[in-house]
Length: 355
Image (cartoon, rainbow, N blue to C red; front, top):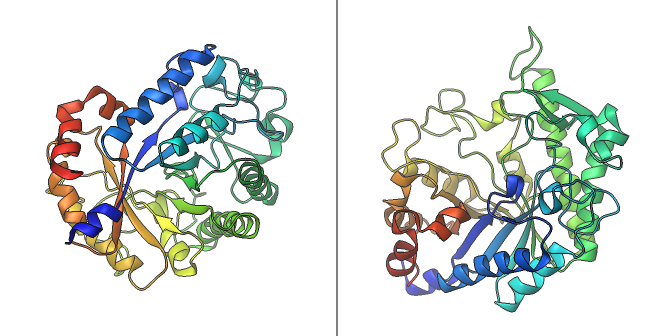
């Protein structure tokens, strides 16, 4: 691997806002919230990071001015309450000031986290106004991916964001249908109903891609799926793994998105160690590299530095990535571990990886 590759590889970090995981730690204090975000950016810049993936719509709510989604409760403690400034506008300004890229991270289907019902939502929340859009599962609420109005609502949300803000990318994570959302008794996981669920997700992604490319084609569209599409025991095209399969458990047909070119990049969450018995790290890096080969879809690897075992071998994992020319960089989760310097991760990143 030459040094030019090191200079060009993406170095990104996910910044989670659901539950205030990474930001904000303080509610109803504009100055404190701004200081928190600046601290995050300054730390990442010092470690040679060039991109942030900030969760701006974690639960059908908004960290930005919206006519569609209510203000997030994670800013003020009350959903729908105006925080007195525009966090997204501030995020973008400070990120670009440091010559870093800003990707807006959204959860397309999640309405609530566990234990919150429709009555708890703002009166102007889309789910409350449109209860026919809602699926309930495992004590949480989700939008029904097969509902055509839901697909249009998600696409309209994306249009609003890219029309009003100078972002560099739109980013979805691994939540599509709820994990292990069941089929009715007698239905097969490769049957008509299961395939229609996957196709509904595909249709949403196709429409979002179309909206982005027809409105502001310079904005990238990427997805970070669960690290295993299918195991080889289920499909000869699958990976030599023994794990949950996103194709069946989340109705996420990642290979179709890549084949159709309806995403600009894919960032699988390969959240396992090098010698993991069910999902060995390099097995999956090679598998995803082969999948994107000869396509226009870029490959980044999602790295889980909240796992101490992974932190202790992160230099080896990055060196594995660099063996495969299809891998164009990494996105790290989570930001908290970088700030807390879990297992000296800052020194590992700065001294051993991103010199």
